[in-house]
Image (cartoon, rainbow, N blue to C red; front, side):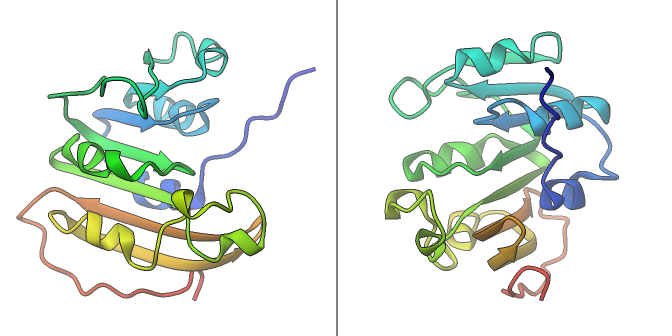
Amino acid sequence: MHDTPTPPSDWVRRWCTGLAPGRALDLACGRGRHLRWLAQQGWQVTGVDRDEQALAGLQGLGELLHADIESGPWPLAGRRFDLVVVTNYLWRPLLPAIIDTVAPGGRLVYETFGAGHERLGRPSRPDFLLQPAELLQACRELQVLGYECGQLPSPERVVQRIAAQRDDAVHHLPVWAVAPGG
């Protein structure tokens, strides 16, 4: 029996569709829902995860790095990507390193759980839930293209998500913190 692949996040599709393919990083890629989609769009993909079994199912898609990024060395030191995708993952000490992997002109698309999600289920520990505007603060050296925080209906969850670019040529746009879909 084959598992039906989970479709890519609407947020990831929204902020990656139409970009000229280049080098993409899917950090904490898991079973590769975004890695697969990006490869189908023509991106040269790199996936990083600590789950060796999950990575085994992604062979042939691109570069796969088995690494425990929370307790081991940062495997991407000095490397830059045109697109960095992070979903459903938060380890605060790595936020500066993650942002540093965005190449000049590159884009970060990040979506994970926010404070308030604990009343809905896991993750429920504050260590794994972004505080209000925390992504905005972490991405202060990037140009924010889009930002949302709030509760989504299906599956029900509280998220915080950002699309940001490392490019001084991008005009500063006003940031509107709104509930997703609002």
